[in-house]
Length: 477
Figure 1 (cartoon, one colour):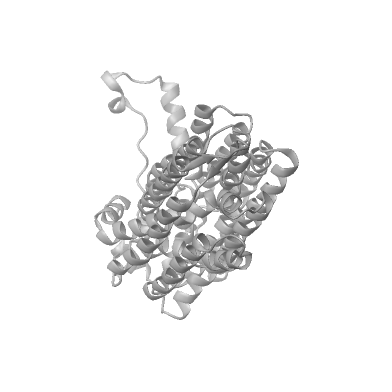
Figure 2 (cartoon, rainbow, N blue to C red; figure 1 turned 90 degrees about the vertical axis):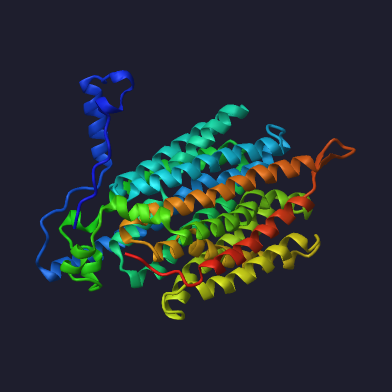
């Protein structure tokens, strides 16, 4: 199997006006780049029993690492959604500033998802994944010391960049260690990490903030994330070939070594094909629409429930957390349903989930306050369906139709669209809330969600309709 080409390193041709960096700098940059590249293939093992034993052991380690590790990525990033309300109440930032800060995060995340997705096809996932968690967690601790708008926005944006070291590498690793027939089910299991991390964050962070103040809402998950990054480094794995194991397609009996070699193509060509496929772009737009509504609830759901429906901060956080735990079931079962009931096809279940996604979104925002059971039930349906859709539209459907060697590139392109939608939601949501706020007789700011909620529902409808245009998209090697 051909080896990924090395990343470009600093050299004379890359320096302006022919300026060459000192040899020590070149040596350091070259060593730094090599450290993150995937390792060379080891001599392949021949003992079938040993190969089976090592595959089983490393698969367990990889699956636990990408699931629990990515859950920690979400613990680090989602605390801001809970901290928004205390920041508004303390008048540290207004809604437009909070929306702008969130938009900065998603802008850097959007760009980073694309860049690091393309790099992930060539990288040592073990090291890259751990570095991202370490970097974002460390920055989160620093944010806890900050209350100045521009510095806060810059640090949160930098945190967003390090957060992009998570998703694409996890899916690349999933594709490196598991076969096509296993991918849907296991992708759903991995994707539940979003919900595990976010659900725990809504409950625990809300309690921490209520007890020790909003700054601790950044300190505590930041320190926890730093600790988790070291465990992630210890238990994560690079490609199977680095450990003397055959590629997963050969191990699973999908291809013979000769067939795999015949189909092998340079990483660059496989990645270029991703960019040229209209189906990938349409799925990206579908994911963008889905992410608008998803992050509307994750980012503004607590504020919406406290302002529009009269819940307390802890009550609102608990209701939003319902969607996260329901999302665990949605993420896990969506892959299982498509693999077992629809012969690994995602189009029909995607449509079914999309219908209930729109209905649950509309129910949640339009049923007036005083109907708590409606909020509980709609949040459960919303969580189940949105995370099934995010699993499909946010990567799995595009990964299914593209080359395994360009998995990172696929996740990068889809991530670019997805977080463009999330960034748009933060900016538009913050603007619309600020534009429709009023000041009560007691001086308290009151936010009207009437206009912004229409934006959320319309986005959900687009997430339902757009995938219909790629109903019969086929896989290409």
